[in-house]
Every structure is written in structure tokens, then in C-alpha cells.
Image (cartoon, rainbow, N blue to C red; front, side):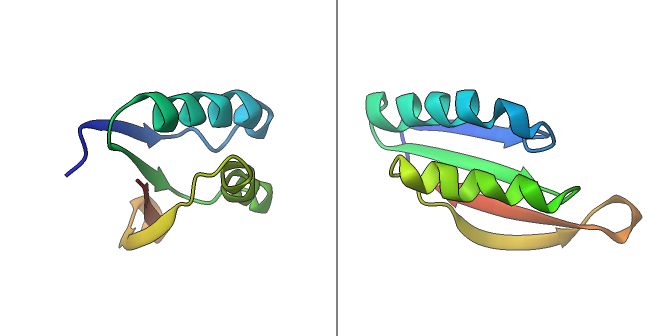
Length: 82
């Protein structure tokens, strides 16, 4: 079990904010003992998936752990990084 959690939802629709988001996640992962990041993701634009490669570039590896049906039948993916 992680000692600290960061929960994220609705952070992927504004791709211009990804550099700041990745910097924040990197700080959390490097300064908090045993962190976990939980991300709920519903695709609106394929460019949003750049977040995963940007995070990986700073050593954060997300793993998809589930997918549930969201509003309107659109799948919501559940990702975690520890």
C-alpha cells in the first residue's frame, strides 16, 4: 500500500498543461514515500495519449488496471503509477 496518493480526473483534455502536470507528478513521485497516482481517463482526442510518453520520459510508468463503461457508453480507463 502506498503512503500517499494523487488522484486525477479530467486532467487530460488540456494537452497544453501536460508539461506542468508531468513536472508535478515527478515531484510527487520523487518526494513522497511510496506514492501512487490514480488516473481515470476518457479519450476525447488521440493527442491526449502523449501524457503517457511524457510521464515515461521522467520515469513514471502508468499501467492500465481496468476499464469501465462511462457516461454515454464511452469507456473510462483506470491507470495507476507507483
